[in-house]
Image (cartoon, rainbow, N blue to C red; front, side, top):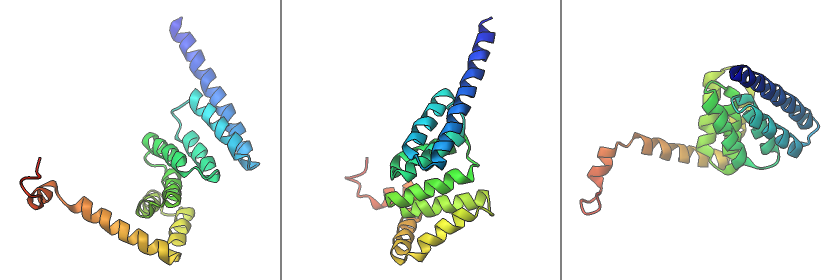
Length: 166
């Protein structure tokens, strides 16, 4: 009996989540982004397992100039579905708005690795490249990150004076 009640509650929550999501989409289309964030949040509360809900809320948060909150939503979506190209693309836009340009490029590229025909990611990447200031900053940041990632801890230990080593 308890299992049946649990299943009924689960179905009811998923139905409520879908209803809130649909209403959130309608609010987004009307450009009522604050309401759409609220509705997507309610959908997530009822069913936190769908990456689409997080991506949708993140997209609305981008429209409200809340890039850090949006990035957190895209991170959650990617944790739920690592093959979700749109989540990477939108997280790249959030990174760009925050000023993390190398990470934006990485996310745009990752979106294109997942879906080579995803035109919006090409457009976002090209928009960054067409801005010379952003392009140069992003390239420099990307090079620094690649260099640091390539360094091995043992290489680091060799360069640290022994009195500073832990």
